[in-house]
Amino acid sequence: MATDRRVSRVAEQIKREIGQMLIQDIKDDRVGAGMVSVTDVDVSGDLQHAKIFVSIYGTDEAKAETMAGLKAATGYVRRELGHRVRLRRTPEVIFLEDRSIERGNRVLSLINKISQEHPDQDRAQSIDDDVVSAEEE
Image (cartoon, rainbow, N blue to C red):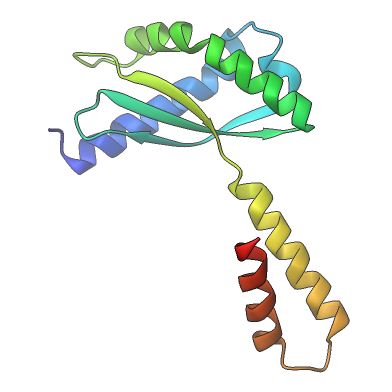
């Protein structure tokens, strides 16, 4: 098992390298359908698996097309990682869509809506109630 420090260093290096690949190396047109950025990389403790979280800006169709392109490019990405990152074994790569930015924007819009509707009421209680109801949806 690798130390936590090593796992985080490997994750950062993988994030940096895959970001470069998205910009320069992956030629699949589907990947360019939506604006893609790597938001996080989760590497297992034994450095054998890497979950790559990507945020995709665009329509739902563009997001689906981009994810299909990324899944098709998984073999290429893993092979390139093997060349760029010096590890005994190159981790298996899995691309996952990160929707946290969308959820954050939705919560912010709810907060703004509430503050406009109830400018004089106790904002903290009103915001708490609406955020809890938004999370339950």
